[in-house]
Length: 191
Ligand code: IMP
Image (cartoon, rainbow, N blue to C red; front, top):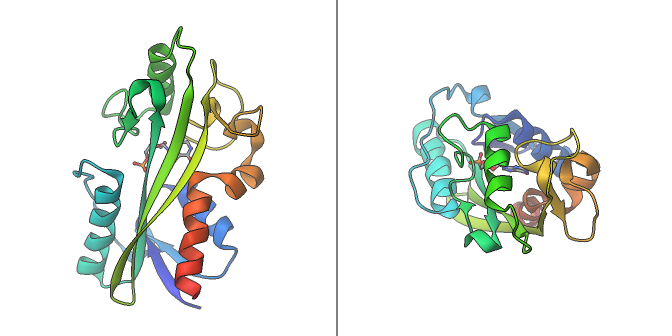
């Protein structure tokens, strides 16, 4: 089985990706290859940050690898928090504080359209490729549900009346931004 390194130490993301790939690849995380240092996301776009992480692993550790960066883009906030999604409410990356700030910034706003956008950078057989997955939806007025992570308790994907956190991982991993980007990834790597 082909081994790919997923340049993340986020256990939620690693679990989602493993479920989406359904055992077709052996996936190792940064910890598995002994990369314990923090790779700073210093670029100004999701694509730039995804590439930066994948190149770092390829150059320093020599593995074929992929990395992803995800942002929440809210229409009425002109695409914010976007590349700043993780640190929206400050350096501590606290999901509760991030959600509280988002809800405060949307208070009284009728337009709650938002989308998650994932950029995956893949370095495979000596080539670099970028793949994108988008999930359109809206921001709820309050938190609901206990599943998922990050902004899942306030994100309602189009076609559903519940948040990702309420819908659970089986539904989320079929329709999410990350799932869509990973489906492209599987096609790319297999064909
Ligand atoms: P990063 O891609 O690890 O930099 O994450 C960016 C931010 O988006 C973090 O605050 C994550 O919690 C959040 N995030 C990434 N993916 C998801 C998701 O699938 N659902 C909810 N929040 C997410």
